[in-house]
Amino acid sequence: MTFEYENAVKELQAKDEIRDLVFSYCEAIRNRDIDLLVTLYTPDASFGSMGTGEDALKAMAEATMEQLEFAVILVANHRITFLSKCEAKGELWARCYAQNKREGYYEQIIKYTDQYELSKSQNLETESWKFKHRRHHQPELELQRRDACRSATWRASPPKWRVTRLGRAVTAPQRLGTVQLQRCSASALERFIIIS
Image (cartoon, rainbow, N blue to C red; front, side, top):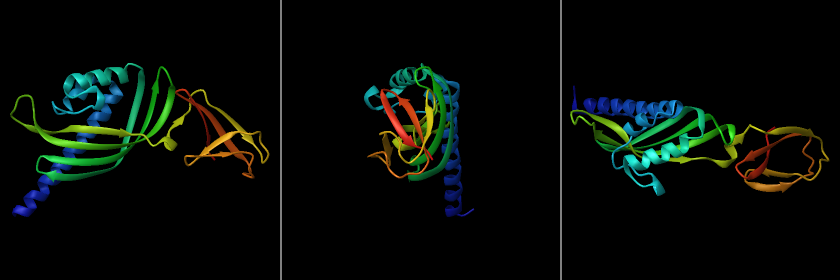
């Protein structure tokens, strides 16, 4: 094997291991398995205002998962870029179907931006890819709250509703034809979103 060929094979293997890391993260969330979640991060991983390391991760996970009843995360468009032989960054999109005790059922489009590091395992004999940092972005327009939502169909001269479209507020009535509105409770905010 040539040197270039060996490096290409190693990079493909590393990408596959990083993708497995992401799938393990999804499994840990689905099963609410904090112990598995902890094994996926480096010992010095950063969790924003919660701090760094295993204790910060456990505190964040317990606070988040306490209300969680179920969650399924489907990932797509995972792009991985190597910064060195033991560091990489990644970006991926995910669709999350979840339900918690406070808000009920909801769906999210999530963008994750990750930093990965090839890290020694606890037995110090093998190395595996782990999260050094993982950031969760939630594009607001993609968020749909479906619990406790009421749909109404209305024609060209509706009462004055507040409609949000592409982040800008517009007031109705407008000649929109038949529009289906969905009134959703998301935290303390009441949102009206055009869905058809």
